[in-house]
Length: 63
Image (cartoon, rainbow, N blue to C red):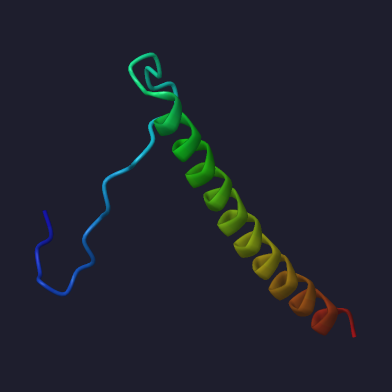
């Protein structure tokens, strides 16, 4: 629970690692795969951004 109204609300996790998949339909499984691929893309983009920032900082201090 947020103590203040301006604190960001946490989104519920759509996927839990190790979750029982036997009750999901084929369409739900495909949708989950698409969502996870999109999340992987988002994570890779953030990693690339952080690597670029780190490399720029390292280059600055190597001078």
